Length: 84
Image (tube, rainbow, N blue to C red; front, side):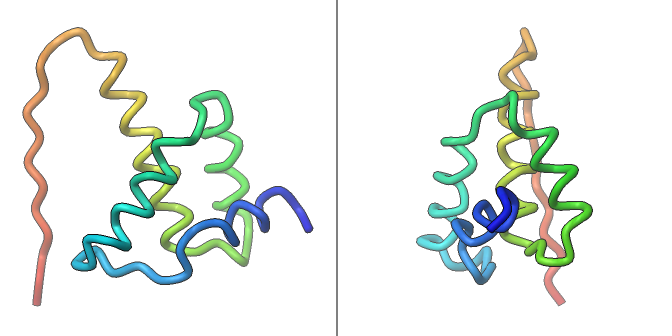
């Protein structure tokens, strides 16, 4: 099994952002990633036909965390979720 397949299999198989417990699992997985592996994971996920939304979300959350930590000023962020 390839590295990306192992990564995808560790991620939650479903994604429901209204499920707080499931989102906490995704968030905790993102918290445990190392910055030096994120770019490679991002590229592998983009190329993999097995890629899942949860796996991509984990990597994007981790990359965002490291990007915000590098800023030397306070940041105010607003999230808007469109619901139909």
